[in-house]
Length: 549
Image (tube, rainbow, N blue to C red; front, side):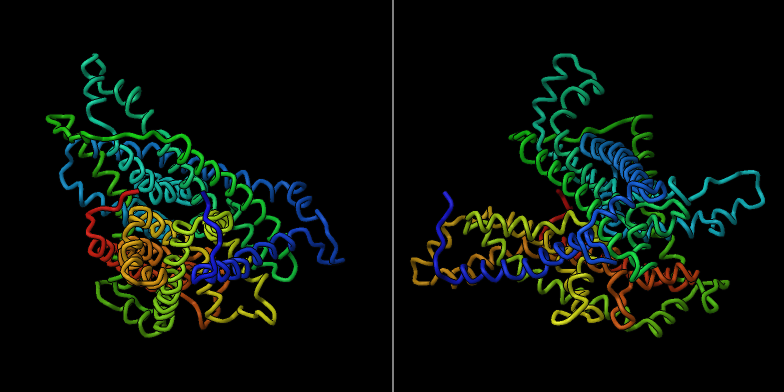
């Protein structure tokens, strides 16, 4: 049963949560919706922006392009990620731990850095283009639909890999042995036994990949070259025509929000209603392959790992090439790092200061909201929980537009200040830490709090002394993952920054557009180093040896 409300500390937390979520989530979202139906000339309610969307082929074609890119990315990531998970779970792979780390680094690095690295590798003046310039070999273009799907697939298949590997760990080996005893071949056993058991989890992960690809801005912006998708169109309509088409950008944003919301609901349905419960009393023990099969399997794993990580490694190597201004020069050194540290020191500092400020807010809010929604259940806490998670399904560029429309005038003028950047980070990344905090709280027995209260502590004191301390591992793991995504954030911050609040991701994007590859490589390498260090910190603080979903 849902508990009745009591006048205590948690009632004030609930009321405060309602006010904050209403002000910083619901109000910006309502501002977006009202703008989408506003005729800017008359100030009246109108469907003119949606009529414009359906009447112009160039505009509605961008939606179909986004769906085509997202579907292709999902299919290729599904094939690649599930195959890798099956191979590394069923068979002994040398260096599997190293491959896991490489896949995770690839997943946590922002896709637009992968896009930039492929421009350096296979762009018109890239390393491979120069290498094969005087040969009859005609390399495929990295630009357009194919390049976008390639980069997105290589950055997103690790998500499928982690979900699938986690599901395979729950499969009881005795079921597979029984199938073998009935004469099933390896292929038939995989198709008729293993895949049906893990399909709900894999499909849920595939939908998350679809949403990520559908909402990504950086990759198609750098590689599109005329292949315009919805996030890029929204950006161009809002920034390129600022003051003329912001309402139309809001209408486009509404369409994207509606699609991602439906997909997220479908993903939740698959996870909650269609998953199988397995005891896994006997986990799968990897088998050792021999001969040609062993060689082929290892060659496949190494090839996939190379495709996923060589671009990041190439960026790191390129960052140590000597430069003369923005141009490459012979030899290696620290020219690019000296230049970015000297001229972009404030940008680097902004990334870490604004990110840490956002993480501090996220940790406190997630800690309180998790306890509120898990231990103090009511219809109102359920609403708060869903409202706090809502930004997870809203594209980053749409969140940026929402905040601009809501906080660009007094008395709540936040535009142009660091607070709007921190707010965007908190709103966009809070769900990560909130979900991990709620997850670990489910594992903490209520009897521990009751024992503390029986010894004389108040409920509030018991929470801070006992429960909050026990929640730290879950909170920290979520906070580290939130931190990694914050420092790599581009979609929202590209709309909100000023010269005084510019972050590293924005500086990379601007450097790429200006063909200053030395600065872009050095800044991207700093993000890669920070991502790896943060991941190692995650392993150290949680005591885990891998990230599993």
